[in-house]
Each structure stands twice: as C-alpha cells, then as structure tokens.
Length: 81
Image (cartoon, rainbow, N blue to C red):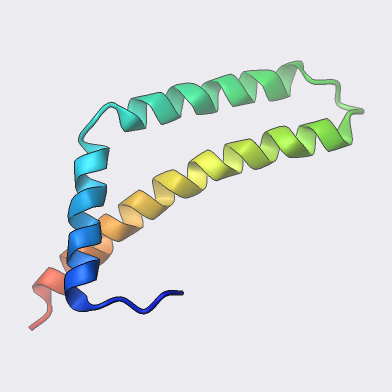
C-alpha cells in the first residue's frame, strides 16, 4: 500500500466521489453484464477462456470497490481530529 498524506486521502476521496457521480458506474455495470453473458455462453470445458473472462469481471469489481473505499477513507480522514 502506498503511504498517502491526509490531504491526498481526502483529495482521492473527492475524485472518487466525482467519478461515482458520473455515468461511469452505469458503464461499468453494463460492461460487467456483458462479461457475465460471455461467461454464460462459454463452453464449461474451456477452463482457460473462462478464467480470462472471470478475471475481467473481477477487474471491474475491483475498480468499483476501490472507488468506494477511497470515498470512505476520505470521510474517515475528514472526521479525524
């Protein structure tokens, strides 16, 4: 984990909040739905292909989680005395 100053944490949270207040979450949801459709259509015996598809879905979920985590960390920092 990269060590950040209090101000960097707050700034990152503000930027994450800004991104979450755009069309980005909708686009990520659409992309995630497309990825899962691709997974469902894939042959269950295609282990390598399914792992790649699953990895893409995990990547989208990681971005969503990180944005929310940045926003929450900023809130915590703002409330610290």
